[in-house]
Length: 140
Image (cartoon, rainbow, N blue to C red; front, side, top):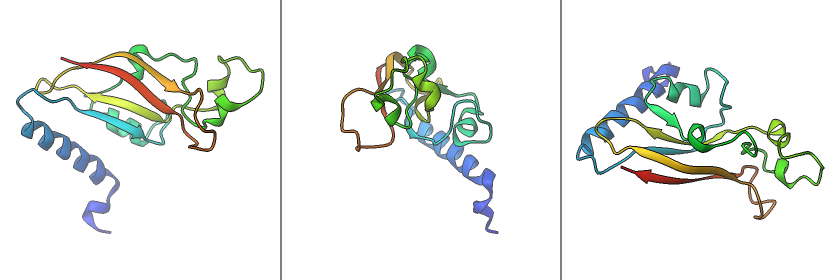
């Protein structure tokens, strides 16, 4: 087995990349935001999300202004259903695996989340099996 193919090496490579990026952008004119499909439910251990969040420097921006109601990002078909399920129960049929995370460091601008939501209305039903996550962010 190659040394860099060990499970922990990907995590350490990611952390080294973050620190290198911060050192290059030390002038406090930048912020670091990670967005994407991490294929990781919020509370499941040993997943991409839990590994990224383990160092305590990342913030899940959903925790600032997101709500349980309409929080599922996958499958998008949960919201296209014609069923009479209330919007409260629909997230239980799906899960949130798409994220917007910000990195906290004294050397970077702070990211303030004013609003965040799952875009689950309209759109083309066959466009994706995920719903997009939208956020209104302020850097300071």
